[in-house]
Image (cartoon, rainbow, N blue to C red; front, side, top):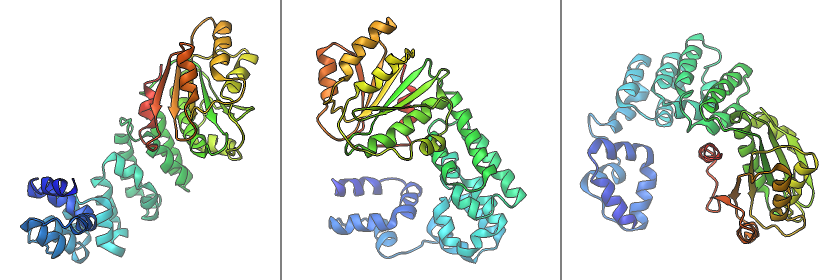
Length: 346
């Protein structure tokens, strides 16, 4: 399979293959070597001999450190050299304002947000020209929905409060284009070994909190519920409010919904983040029946299924004819794609 992959990549036109090799040369070297795959002539020269053909992107990267700031900036723009590759090749010269400006102008919205912490170190908060270029780049990111959690996580790691506020403003505009109706309940599993569920529940709740027009409640459960109103709250606020939540105890998914029933709160959607190992009363399917009688409607249920115990929740709901939509996260959690899952909930 790897051999077929490598040969297929070599069929790509030179510029496309060269861009792959400039970023992943060491990985390609390992793949060829470990599978004893014979490379083609061009791949042999680049990957194993380390040649840098005149006029190629490899030659351009090799020369960056010897160029003046303006020349290096032009080269980065012309060849669209990836940010981290350019940064490594430039060394200390990367801190020169002209070069940082070129790097900012080169970046896609995703690269700009992902590398915000690095740009902060390179002076984007202290140099007015760099600050202006960075803010222009953020305007492009506002229309992108695939960078929402990248924006959130970047904001978490930034020390400069003004920069943090700019990123949070971008996130607000991104989420405004992904509106979800109604009041929502996020049930996060905090039973034994469910640390991953706790983290995913925070992400789902923070995305919903910015996205919905109604209220958002978050209930962490094991055999007892812990309720937090997170309406309008950002991820860093939710993390601070839930920093002492630990994964321990048994599992009663229904206790969180019963808390809403006791409070007579009206909800229009439920997101459950759990392995589905519902093993302690009140069970979710029974609590759901009681809540449906109170509300006079069957509230949509979405299950973010993480690894853990057998998924009893799914079986119980099937037996009771409760419709439950499942997002399978057992193969791993891609936090940057979670907003797109949340976006589909109705």
